View 1 (cartoon, rainbow, N blue to C red):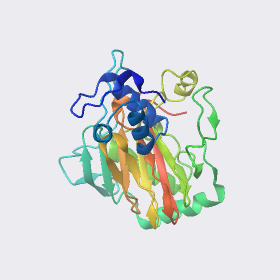
View 2: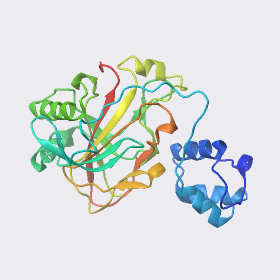
View 3: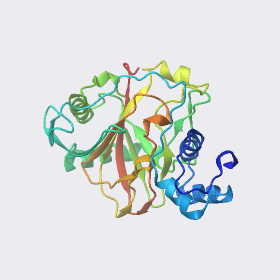
View 4: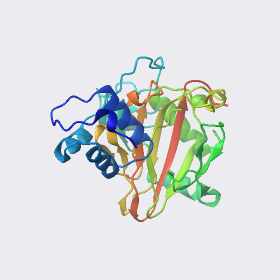
Length: 286
């Protein structure tokens, strides 16, 4: 991790493009605040200046950004508390514009959460991530959870939840990947990462054949761990604490760190954390 190109100990200096790109890349690679702070200090930054830098939003504006894609977004979000989700209303209790992000209250009932856990539990195995080099899957040390996927429309429960999500977000159900359920035990985490597929990686072309880019993520909390397990967004200093039935939704119109959607699952301190994740694609997912 090299920072020599932008070493500077001025507290008031502007965040240059080089610094912004470096911060985005290092966070995406899973380096935490303590490691970033040490690297900056080793490169010549003063302690106060380095700490100040790490609290600032990262804005990366390269010359050749991918063209923006259409993304899901609930009608009237940011204007009304209660949003239409078809068979029920859902409250948007936190709304951000940059990145487009919502914390949703009551998307799932406690009974639905328990039913998802019961249906998923016998099918759990070590979570995999997409291998961006080949387009396949791989075990990743940054993700230490167990998980499984439901097929789209696999059961009445899954169909009902998918229809609710589609109505809420104004996005076709067929443009969604299968619902993934994950369990994080004590100490398990998912280090900060992006959900889009990096256009620069060799395996991305084959991945996009199944439905185009991912354009949005919905994380639904199925229970409440005793401690830890928040969903964290380092670029906007936001932590969403798991609450049964609630969810966090965010979209990314460009597959690039400029989306400011770097996020991760903080380590569970005690208890288990169960979540269900829905990724949305730009086209029908096949």
